[in-house]
Image 1 (tube, rainbow, N blue to C red):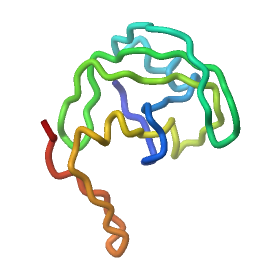
Image 2: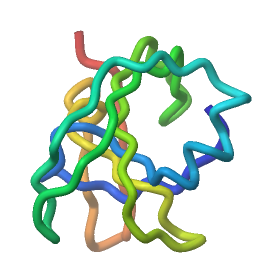
Image 3: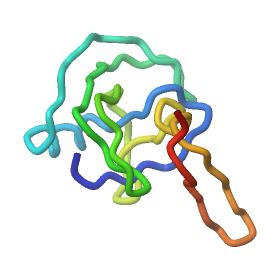
Image 4: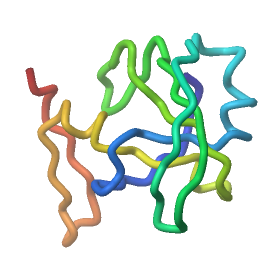
Length: 109
């Protein structure tokens, strides 16, 4: 998967990317369509699609066959989607507010 800016959202179950960003990267990564789904977001209900992406690198570690939700929501140059708990639960992580750091320690098994 090409580079994406994904703010951490511990309240989001799936990792999501914006539909426009998906259109930009779908040729360079292998996505497999799974299903349509309705999501409850901070802005209410919205429809989206679930895909499996063959790999995603975060914190120097490669995650394989990861489910990604593709939704139509506004983004900016600093936000391509949201990093949800389906990714975060695979790591031991710490948010160091004093030093403004997000620390991924190791992949949990």
